[in-house]
Image 1 (cartoon, helix red, strand yellow):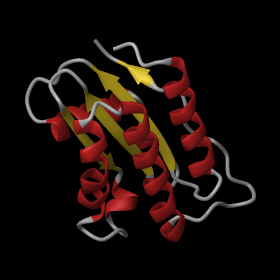
Image 2 (cartoon, helix red, strand yellow):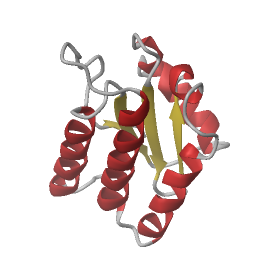
Image 3 (cartoon, one colour):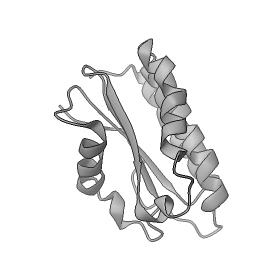
Image 4 (cartoon, one colour):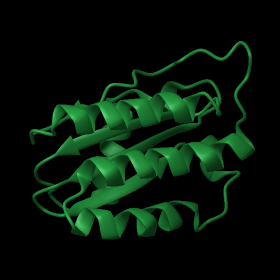
Length: 141
């Protein structure tokens, strides 16, 4: 998928802003098609992108397969142990209307910001916090 440069910048800015509030690590992965269930695909990508290697196990992956109109949000063990069970569904439901209108950049940046807000409650930013994962958007086929 070719995501317009201004949309990419908006998503990257959202990641940077969100990570100023939390020690959590947020990434976005976009591809055209998703074979099978999007949550399972996101879990595979989570490990392929090395997101399970953060010190506090507090990585979040927002995944979008735009042509198949599938998306999911997955987090590492450290997050799942602390956040309410409906955490991911709430953010997903907030993103859904924007995605339905093909507002991919807006939906993804909003999802990133919401994830950052909630993560800040459980994993606040620390003075010595280091960016453990790339903020770049990753793209699949």
